[in-house]
Length: 408
Ligand code: GLU
Image (cartoon, rainbow, N blue to C red; front, side, top):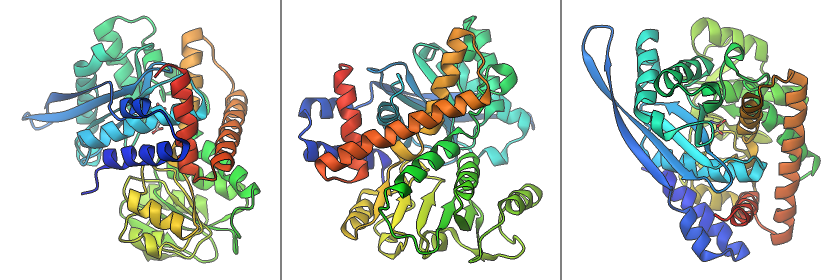
């Protein structure tokens, strides 16, 4: 088993060696400020009690309140949550929003519970961590398998327990009627599209057919697909957890979305061939976008990846060994902490609106997000040039400098 927390620390070490960063700072950044494991008893629909395990890791708050999502997945572990909270600290520093890093998760498969059970687990988790979170303390958000409905339940539970008058500001990614921000749902994918456009404008790769393969068709995958289609690029492959589909001539996104909605999966989409997730990663495309889970690009398959550009919309999709293989073969990797930072960037706008009692139109939110992403890419690019280093190390160096300035 590849431990994502070890991957995260190795990435930081590599960047620290390149830029000669202060070793005491680096050691401090390798340990989260605190983390908790909680037990969540829930009476299931059949009347039986089941106890679920949840985590929250608060990595660092030198730049502002801890901030990061909550994921529901059967493979959530403490090390995964710690790694994800660590990446949030660096991501928020790269994109320049005044937040630290946090992350949470509950170990279960949300596809195997009823809506009533899902609500009870969501509320039960908040009952256990309500004293650790708050609008100026720790601000959760959606992540893998969580959405605005779940955030709304959590806000409600948090409000009941704490009587905090500004409870909505304790969560981002809420529904629009409950203090959510315009543009937040599509923000991660939209922001990724802006960064990808900036990367492509640098002519770092020679694109032959302007083709893209995307692994993952959840909230991130769907919106990055729309964003790259708007750039005029051809999406030849898409996948979800049940498998993928391929069409050399390009997939029609509207049809793929409709098919997924109707059948619950992408596979068997008419006019395309079924492929596995493993096959998708090795296709001869110009850009590969992992947009699902961590550790999908490993020592085992990295040598067979053909795309010259890997654009990480998932958190932690590339292991340390795979990263090394990509670097040695001259591939460009745009790291998660830059590529997918548009989600939390917009979470900042949502939080700001809640804290100031404002509601901005969608155009305004997306315009601000666009500037944020263009600036973040420009800042990382400057460090990449200065140290002649990978984009991942450049992003870490930039973030570490900002964390040092904040007194981390
Ligand atoms: N879950 C998203 C991420 O990994 C967003 C977190 C947030 O908005 O707080 O970046």
